[in-house]
Length: 472
Ligand SMILES: *[C@@H]1O[C@H](CO)[C@@H](O)[C@H](O)[C@H]1NC(C)=O
View (tube, rainbow, N blue to C red):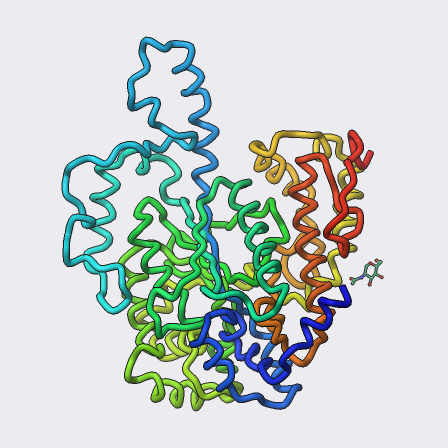
């Protein structure tokens, strides 16, 4: 551990940027990103600190697919029947996977994939996407059934080169494992991107081309869920309240009064967002990306954003300020379809969260002591049914700050695990310990179904077998 401490201290000069929000996330994007970071201005520590508080970013995201889990359950009886009744099994039945999707079937009818003009790149706008997607689903009916409207693909990622922080890649692995666990439990797909799809769109800008490409690659997904690489799921049971977003196409975490009254560039966090796989989103991302470093207007946008947001201290145009700008200036055009979520930790600032984890653990154990069905051992595949039962006992827990509910996503804004260039306002050790704690807190929710538990959240290497009927 002392070694880790040293690691986090490295390169004070680079630190900087973290807060610059976007940068933080990106730490990792090779040359471009180091250039960016090095060029960031560094305000006074206090100012930076403030910024950081509001800022939550990270890099990458993942996306899940809620329906998939339901389909899974539904399809199981089918395959058993097929086995018992082998004579009636058609090759197509065999091709249906556990979620009920037929992954061996791509009919000859032409779709958008056959159009030589269709491009996955951010420079060429995708057109007629809603019609094209609908048509693809028509030809692939196994993906069009129940649950299609709540199917989610998670995307996350990191730079293409090794992290500068010697333990950075290890930390990213743990953050990724955490997302994989969440997605497996809920039957979601996940895509990890580690290359700049538009070479000039570095750091925080990199997610836009990745999200666009993912929409085209996954027409079966209704939602794409970007989750920065430095964000961890700390409630493995909680599911996105997708019903709430039926009339919206983009969901971000933020505070409307900070957007519209304070006009703060940290009024939202662009490191975690949910975006509907539709033409509106492609159009929105086209406008959003037009403020990016791949355009001739990048410098101009930097000036515009800096003058719009008094709390923005660095001169470069960044994705988060750009998003707030669009909310402020083009509210009629986009605002109606953008849901600013402030009720629960769609993502939350780690400093606000980590110290509450011990009390939360205690609360949950107390409830389990009282309720035998919550502590009943079960297969991981049926985890969602236990999550639903838990909800009955969490009605008084609240959500977000001050709640004793497990925080949904804890975002290590400013910790820069990949570069190690953490914000000066906290020590590297505090970032490191907080990450261990949150990741092991999450891991205990997973390991439990494998029969083990980390007794000490700061000791990632040790587990103990969980006694039967714990914690009776
Ligand atoms: C944890 O709970 C104790 C007892 O209720 C309380 O005094 C303490 O402030 C709580 N700690 C945090 C970090 O919330």
